[in-house]
Each structure stands twice: as structure tokens, then as C-alpha cells.
Length: 102
Image 1 (cartoon, rainbow, N blue to C red):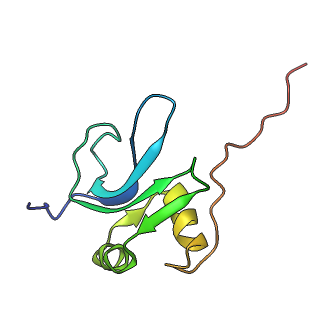
Image 2 (cartoon, helix red, strand yellow):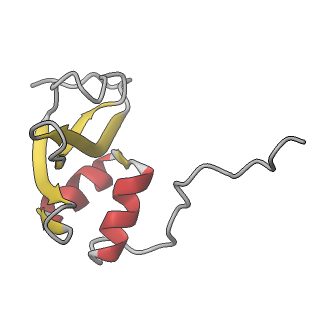
């Protein structure tokens, strides 16, 4: 698997599982790829929000990809902070509320 120098790598969640039963894979992929394309370089873990937020993350490989230059998505960044894999501040991922129009 060759990665071109100019591609931007992302570590993000990829939804897998059946309808109404969301489970997620943590994958490294090119930023250009769609989240549902199924193309990725490596699986780094899994996340199941329904089972009490069970997380199975490979911290060593995540740190490796971050050191190579991959960026974590905002949601995954917050997940990695809560698991103490990386340090820093949480990112607000909720959209800003707009005041109701009169």
C-alpha cells in the first residue's frame, strides 16, 4: 500500500454494523476518501457507543500514525483524550446554535 506524499491522512471513525445498531472502526484513510467508501490503510481499533462506549484502541499504532503526520477527526480526537492516548484540549464538535428567527 503506497501513499503519495501529497495525500492528507486522517484517523477517523468508519461506521460498520447493521441498521440502527451503530458500531465504528477506527481507521487510517486518505482524507479524500468518503467515510463510507470502505477504503482504508489500517484498522486501529473499534468503538461501540451502545455497549457503554466500549473502546478497543491500539494506542501504539495511533501514536505512530499521528507522528507520521496523520490528523485525527474532531470526534476521534476527543475520544483519544478521554482514553488518555493523547494530551490536549477537547474540541467542540457540536454545531453552533443560531438564535430562532422571529
